[in-house]
Every structure is written in structure tokens, then in C-alpha cells.
Image 1 (cartoon, helix red, strand yellow):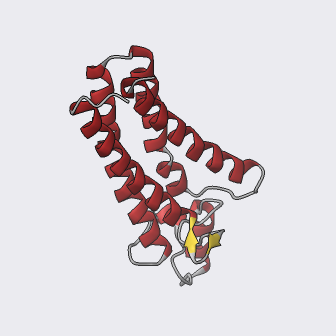
Image 2: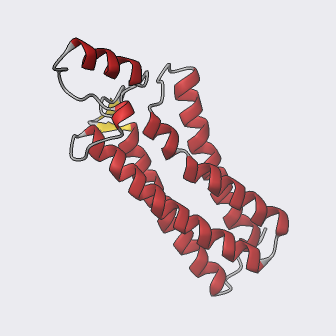
Length: 162
């Protein structure tokens, strides 16, 4: 198998694996996603589509374009994941619908917040491993996939077939 097919296949497989882990943690692990968690999945859906297009086409130009677009998508994903980590650590204000806003000043405000509140708060992580939350792992994986896409682009552009 040439790099023209192998590299988009790896992109497709990595994106599918991340999404499978996210869905498994949601369905079987009972970790409900917050609003930002759902947004964090978008780059992987886009990369899945880009990888599939490149695989089906099997052409150098399509693979190069797909990997370049995937790199841009994952750069955006890194930014989104960093924002999510920042919301969890209270470095940034999160979306008003999914972050706790401190104590309410009146019963009316409490009622309004309660009705507007998402089932899962973006600033209160449900799970972590060694202090790294799922948003933190997403940041690391998205960064790794940016680097992979750039490496793969360089490899294809240099014409190294292995």
C-alpha cells in the first residue's frame, strides 16, 4: 500500500478511534458530554470525511488536499480543546448555558439559571486521569494529529513511497 492511501487511512482510523472512545465513554461509561465536549468532536468528524474522500480517490492531489485541510481542522480543534480546558480550570468564561455562574442573587435568577442550564456543566469535568480531563486528552490528541498531518503532507510532497 502506498503513502497516498496509507496516510489518509491512518487519519481516518485515528479519527474513528477517537470518536469511538468518546461514544463508548458516553454510552457505556455514562459520561454525559457537555456542550463543549460535543463541539470538540467536530474536527474528528471532519477528518473522518476528509480521510474517506482521500481513500476513495486514491490520488496524490486529493490526499495532499485532504491532509492539508485536516491539519487546519485539527489546528482549530487544538484551539477549541484549549478553550475547553481553560473553561474547566476557570481561566476563561465558558458558554453561559453550560457553566456555573456562582450563587444566584434571587429566586427569580436561580429559576432562570436552572431552566437555562445544560444537563452537564462545561466547567465541572466528570472524569480525569492523573489530573488530565477528557478535554485535556482531546487537546493532546488534536495536537498529535496536527503534527501527523504535517508529517504526512511532507512525506507525500517529497514523494517518498514506502
